[in-house]
Image 1: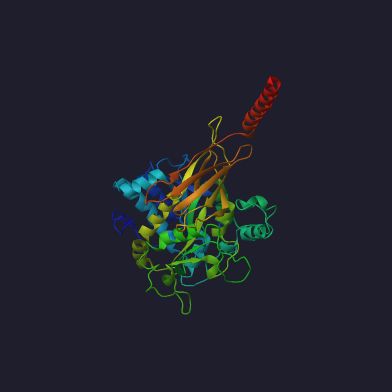
Image 2: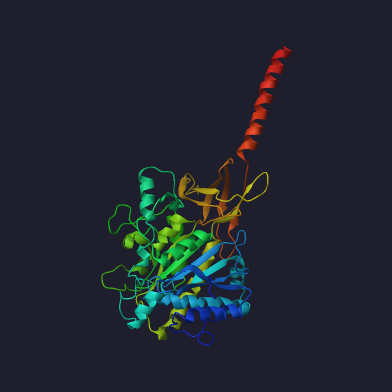
Length: 456
């Protein structure tokens, strides 16, 4: 386990209190002023209903630029306006990453140099204001946005599309927005902003920070059968469990068996390593977590970081101490699995929108080898680069693209901590080139047969 000792977002350098909506950009601007070479402040495409910008900060060694083979990561907090801890943790995390970079922390410098990190402290500033105006004590007031819409029920229901594809044997398991001809409702501006963000950047990994319990929740969030509660696994169940555990295992209370449930009679998540399948907890449709997974290449988990949704300011620094290592360790998970380039074998140019399909062929014992297709494909980005999160094991990876011959490679994944993902490149031959070669061989074969026959 890696434990950070140089974290500097402490009371001497960062004021641990509840920051209002106008203070968020000021805190982030302060980070940019201290670390201009590795940070950038920007706002998402839409404002909140009340017109508050949704401010985000990027931290990378080349801010504002997607670098080939450098994975993109995001944290989103305060989706429910009265769940405020994540909002302050992300402000503190931005400050801490900047200060650690300036202090020469080798682990953080390595992480920032290898990753494009995006932090959105507040997705629902209007709900935060509503909750704060009543003292932050109510369990419901401020949860929704200013139009009284729960933003975590407002995304297109791609679970329904996926389950229908499975039922009717439709061979389409990713980027499901292409199957939606029209939306059944008009998403809220905050939801639109996140949807546009997800579809605009090649995010690989994400987490959505909430409050009200203490557990790392992973997809699927919605049950297949429609019942309120049943374990509903994705094709990437092993990977999602590993991602959730990466957070819970670095939090002092989340996976602690002595941690009791937030409410009497509820599940003691500490007895389950501090993780849960979302649908096995309770079914949610229209959630952001599953939308990420089914609309893009991004894997997202939901982090419930405490029983109290609006903790007093006096408790925020201790919450930072409890979460800082887990926050950083989870970012490192974006470097697990494999990554690489899909290129045209003739021109050497990257091929965008190539499909990456993975089959797990890990040996179980001396006589049995898995042969499991992971039926969730991902696609290459604009320059042909791709990332595929995987747990340790042996895999067959196939790249396909329109107009090209498919190509399969084998690879073993180990996932040593805090290193780059293993690289696996594909050079695909265009169909026309393959056809020309095949035609030449056919002519040669026929000619040879004829010449041989005439020679008798």
